[in-house]
Amino acid sequence: MKNEKIIPFKNNEGISFALTQRLLKKGKKYGLNAIFPFGTDKIVVAEWVHIKCRYGCNRYNTNWTCPPATPVPEKARLILGEYSLALLLVGSKNCTDFYLENGRKRANQVRCWKGTISMERMLFLEGYYKAFSLVGECCALCKECAYPEDCLFPQEKRPSVESFSIDVIGTLRNLGATSTVATHHCQDFNYYAIILLE
Ligand code: SF4
Image 1 (cartoon, rainbow, N blue to C red):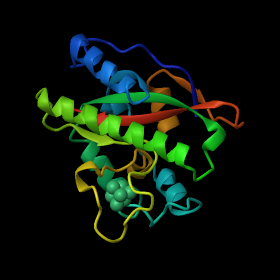
Image 2 (image 1 turned 30 degrees about the horizontal axis):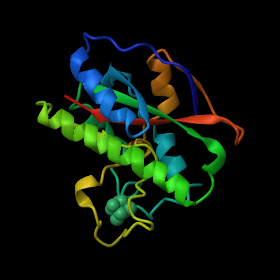
Image 3 (image 1 turned 90 degrees about the vertical axis):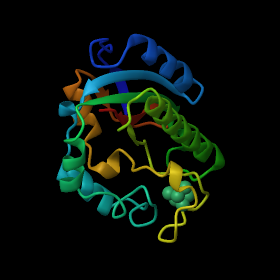
């Protein structure tokens, strides 16, 4: 997806400006160039997202961070209901590799994944003890996921945003952002992760 506009973050959303800046500094090292605090009531969870994972995605039933290993939509709604504040992390990538299984694509995935988990850890140490990441795309820490055998890096295992049946475009619209689907390999597309905070 190509994101054209996202509302600027507000400092009154329950996280300090200073902490947001420190997170941003860390995130940039991993290709995550923007952070927006927002209320979890803006997150759209939809059954059709789950159906798109189940039918038409070759990751289904192959990765610990994708369905059916992740919560069903009903459970995802319950979990999200235990949070009121979240952070949207945004990165940007080139589409050229999107449908390829190459090392460069995987390196980018791993970089963003590690950045998200690293920021979650930082937030935990800042007192956000409930902090929990929903990461963009599926986990690529291993060249081939060990699923259904035991995960090789369980401390870094998190569900993907999509596996939580989150309608990303609908959620962005709720945040006042417009987004379009990148349709050409020359275009950049945005990467979105969410850290549930409190
Ligand atoms: S760390 Fe490896 S085994 Fe665990 S979910 Fe990621 S790719 Fe799969």
